[in-house]
Image: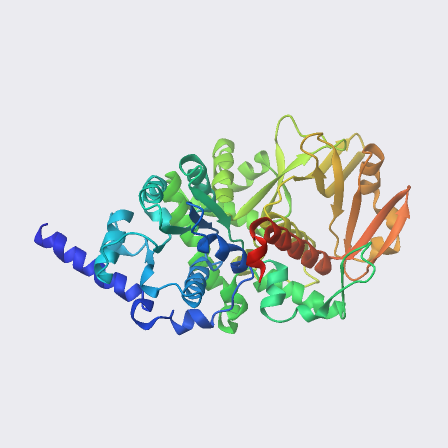
Length: 487
């Protein structure tokens, strides 16, 4: 080994000792320990702790949703469960001194620092693994080589990570998506969920509220500030969320992550398109309109939308017609920010009286479904002569391609007072039999109404957002946790 290589090795070992204070103290740093636990840790930790399944756990998610914090909380749980702290190794792959160092060499250097020669029964955490070229090949090799050691990796380029995970890690990787904060988590983390109560009559909705005005206020705080844990708990960041989110999240994704992943040369062009979409989240777009307004070629627009979706910044929702049939040629779509807080940070907070209020309420509710990995939904839009109509969310059975559930997102009580005004919804129901659930959100009213032999369930938007996000979290819990892990 050359003198330079020896010096580099010594520096890496020093950095590893610095990044793993529990080797000597037996505990994680106090600042990480003090940070609130997202409920999702109860789903992720059992995957980390399970040594019986020879798979690496891949923690994916957009920037600043708490992946690194969750890793530290998992490390604390491992230590609390009796795991030797010197069997837990953490490395952030974006640390400059680790550049171009293989995962295997990093593991070897860590064992050198710990004065351990054996390779079994370690827990290895590779944070921000996407910065290592061909990471998936390296990690698969580690899983195959060190059969009694658990590997956990995290990364921010969610879709690209997932694609590589699926391609190279079949049977070796377990993917776990950590989304931005859901409305359920937002309330729970701040101990505000006491205002939400369980209803005795669950035929409309399992939940009600003690004070709808307070819950609506919480809902708009969630829309403006609630997507990122650090924003929720920092009054200083709330004073200027644009600086935090725009600089630390958007610009790093748009100016660094996506260009490096996809070889984008005109990053300002991509940024311009994203800002145009972000301001109009929840609107219908066409390739023609986007091309004309942003001044970008249509073929390039299509690629950019794929990249922005891969970065988990937007969700493209496809259109169906009045008969729930997909469009043979996709010319228009709805686009939603995957986190309503992005719009507030890029432009300004919104209130209940703002013109964009309806679109942002719709974005927030769509996001609860998106964050729960539910993607079997569309929006319906049609125009035949003078007859035009739209339905906000339509769930379609994959096997039969028939609509089975609908939701119309409103921030008003007027349709509760007069359901006959829901003309597009009624027309869609007339043309599609077998719709099992019809939900119309309101500002404050909870109830039901029957019209045209169809039962409409009216649910306040804030309660519906809470219901959806909690239901999907509990569904994931049931899918992931074994009975013995529920203690």
